[in-house]
Length: 248
Image (cartoon, rainbow, N blue to C red):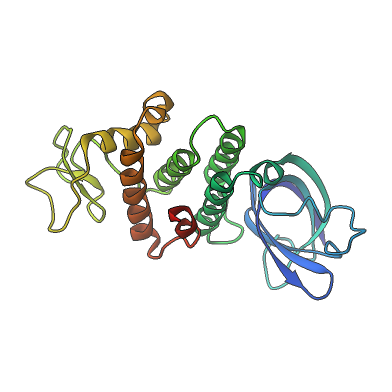
């Protein structure tokens, strides 16, 4: 029997029995963790409100084995709030839906329970903090998070040099299956031809150049979001369900 303490972001919750919940978190040290929080659906629960999606928490687990994952789920025994992102995002539909897509994406990339996912965790915390601050457009923050998540997981797209032969850019074609920007000699059939401004925008979002990203026109933002969603879906092999609510 062991006690573990970690900090993490609540990704989602599921009802269990009459008063319990299964909580899925992305933690700093233990990666994705699923744990049982007993009695949190009761009105008198001491920490039920802290274990809601978007919650950044310091949490203690009790596990019967030597690891946090296994055949039986660990128990949440103590929770302290570090940052209540959900209470801020809930008042803005665009930021809430963008944040929901971030949570779903983070869970997909941290697909194997118990594996360290420190970079993904830090990306998620930083993105939610930026989203809650409201200094940049919600869709831009989401696209930046998606691109950087792809990068830290080994799928960084190119928006300048040819992803296949390395020809210096700018290159006008974009191939989802080819790794991003491609030259005329390397382009496969059916690749996209985005505007140069869209390619610059996506490059700025990947590198954190917010002055360039914030100055982009809405039409280039829409085109860029479509490319990011297609590229993400290709590498995850299925789409992120939350993205369809942003499109509305």
